[in-house]
Length: 143
Image (cartoon, rainbow, N blue to C red; front, side, top):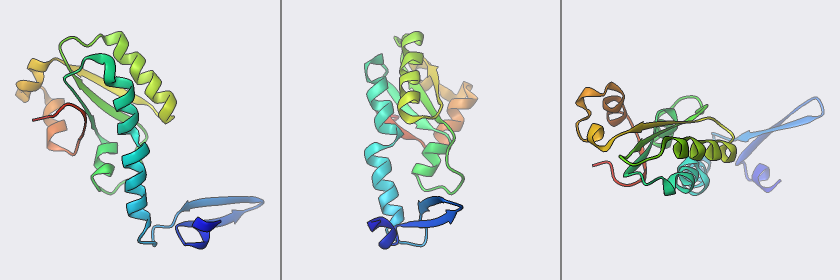
């Protein structure tokens, strides 16, 4: 009730149901959303689940990273994850993605590339697209 009374949440009734949503007119909503993303967002879950893969670099890219960086658009339906490493076991990668999916309750799409491919990414259109668009470093540093 306090979030509704404070104008952070907007509510409406549909029949006997009560629907809640963030009140975009309240200036506190954007920083609270950012704080929630920083604290409990997909990057925290991906960091937990992908930590033991031995990857050199793990990035979030795609629509989630774009929203994280403030690009407008619809809420992301999935989480795109780039994993860079020469000794990452593919089965372990997919198991980590499945665990993350269960926690986040949305699809997690991992992409695996070798370190040499990341270093010489001119020949990989996907990697070129990832570095041109917003991304979020989860493990390691991109540059």
